[in-house]
Image: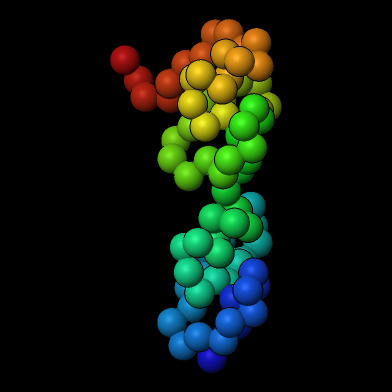
Length: 79
């Protein structure tokens, strides 16, 4: 059995996530989110969905981005 790198729980059904050329081992999506999900540049919550990117910052929603004075927001989905 392998151990989760966040909580240390040894679990027979851990899973591996590869991100940025590194491998991470977790026992739950909660631990994976805690370690890997970006943090909103305004409210500090973890961005679990698509979020909004402006420059090099990630925001959980357009409201938070605008609250930080960001403009020119765009979706990554082609029109």
